[in-house]
Image (cartoon, rainbow, N blue to C red):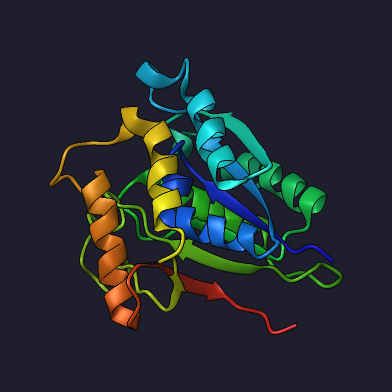
Length: 218
C-alpha cells in the first residue's frame, strides 16, 4: 500500500523551505505527497503565486497541491475551527501517515495558527488512523522567535538530503520573487548553509531537521 504524507504550510514557499529535500526523498521512496497551502500569498504576488507553487512542487514530483485561500498574515482573525474543519476534510480524504507542518514557536503568527489547526484536526480519536506529526523549521521565522525553551525549535529528527538538496534549491527558484539576497536567511545561500549545519549535526553533508510532535510505531 502506498504511504502518503501531507505537507501543510501557511504560505507559498514555506513547504519547500521547510521540507523540500525530504519531500523529494519521500517521493523517490514511493510516498505520495499532497501539499496544502493554507493562506494566500503576499498581495503583490497573489496574482501569480499559485503558478509558482505548482511549478515548484511539480519539480519535486508532488502530484497534488491544494490552495485553501485564507487571508494572508491574518489567520488569527479567522475562527480556528473554520481552518481546522477544512484540514479535517483533507485528512478524511487523504488519510495521511505523516503530516509535516510549521513549528509552534515560529515568529510568524500564521505559522502558529496553522500548527494549532493541524494539531486539532489530527487529534487522536478511537477508530481514526493515527497520524505522525513532524514540525519543520522555516528560515526567517523559526530562528527569529524568542530564544526561550517554550518557543525554540528543538531538532530531534534529521533527514539526510545530500542527494536531494539540489532538487530543493531548484524548486525554490520557481519562488524567486520570495527569495532575498544573502545574508538574509531566506536566500539560496542561507537555505544551503542551514542544510549544511543540520547535516554536520548528524555527520552527513546536508540534512533537514524536524521536531517530533508525534511518532507512532504501528
